[in-house]
Length: 132
Image (cartoon, rainbow, N blue to C red; front, side):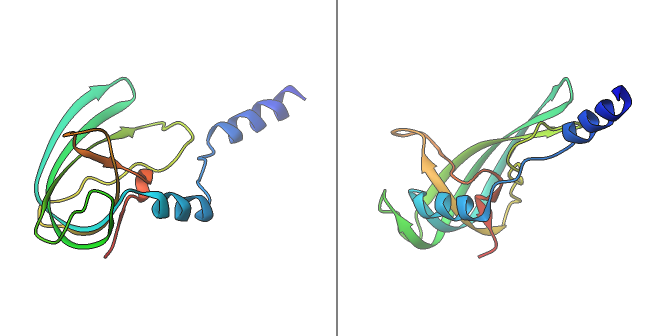
């Protein structure tokens, strides 16, 4: 009995919680900014943590096209985006991590405002960047 319980706990601890497609769609629809951007500059700071590393990412990107924008962004504008990626050996259950954009990469980005004069932040976790 204890062995069965131990195997069950081990199996459950390795599960990775996914977000339903409906929830992801809703988050994308509610994002303040839905823009196609090109990453002009990507600055990365890596910090070693207990179970892996924390990657702080700062992106300066030019707006290629606008799907919607509460801030009134238009093609040619420059936006700044800040986010972190936890690259862990044993990640906890939860949404996927965002990828680190590469300089020159073009993506459809779902973003929200962190505050006045603050960089934009990811609106849909690891699904904030999509192929355009």
